[in-house]
Image (cartoon, rainbow, N blue to C red):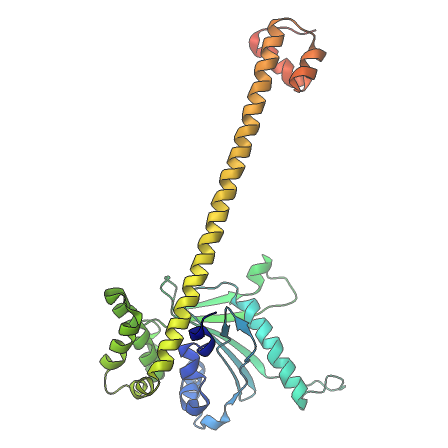
Length: 305
């Protein structure tokens, strides 16, 4: 892993909405998602896992507010396996909660646990609906298993989920910035230049602009880190596709060889039938079953005893 990846493991989404210095942004997004009206950012207790790595990236944001454990993940590519990943993260967070002494697992009285809310913020280029529910049971092939996890996936690409964006200005500004960087990069081919242009072109009324200007180096590091990881994942996916194609070609060659061998056996049996050789000898030499040889003989108009 290069230095950029090592120094900038966090995604920009987490840098904005999981930032202890700006809990008001997290609270604004929380209120927008839940239709609530909390006003005290200090009510948020961050509990993000720092050691849950995925391709060098930490899980994005988790915190507890109003006795609800909110686990947020940002994705720039669609991942149907999010339910199991977030379930694992949630288990670790519950372990931390229990170890902290807030839970007596041996009590004869039911111990209360924070309610989990699992949300994925998606802003990849693959077309996805505004909202989608991903379920762990989809991996089971049925919904009658004893464990379930549901992840609410929200498309936060610019122009989607407009009502949510109106309720959380910072999310709309973030969405605008990502979209503008993407457009700039497509037209210039230079990611760093695309980031700089997007920051400077950002409307002066955006609260996010001052923050990004003050953290321009970190923002570039995060973008480059994520870009490198996405390129690596695409390379791995292409290798898997090539392995699949090679396997298919190999299986085709094997099937071709087997088909050719069978045809050769049939030719041998046909020649021996025309010489009126015994059935048992034809079967032994050609390695075909007697039933198969009888079928060949029937096609040739030869009657076997």
